[in-house]
Length: 118
Figure 1 (spheres, rainbow, N blue to C red):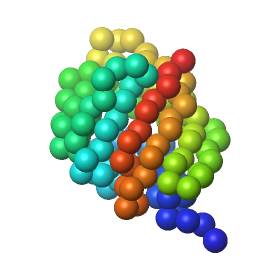
Figure 2: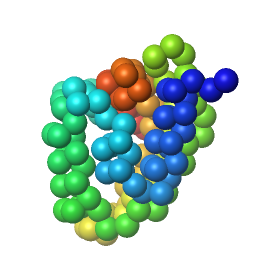
Figure 3: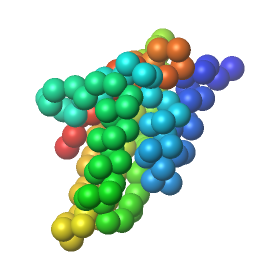
C-alpha cells in the first residue's frame, strides 16, 4: 500500500510537470518550510516562498518548457528524486536545471527541501 508521502510526492510531480509551481507549493508546503538551493541560505516560511516563486514567475519566466522527474524514492519521512527543469526566461535565455531534490516531510507537507543542481 502506498504511503501518504509517496502519494503526495507523486501529486507534486504531476503539478510540476504541468508548470503548476504555485499550486504545488500552496498545496504541499508546510507553514514552517525551509527551501534551500544548493549552498544558498534557506528560504524560510510558506508565505515567503510563495511570494519568491510568484515574483520569479512574474518577472523572469517567459515560458515553461518541461519538468521531468526520472527516479524517486521514499524512506520514512524523507523523499528523494532527480529531475530536469527547462524554462525560457524573459531575457531570451533558456534555463536548464538538472537537480536532485531531498525532502523531509512533516504532517504530509514539505518541511525541509534541498535542491542540488548540475
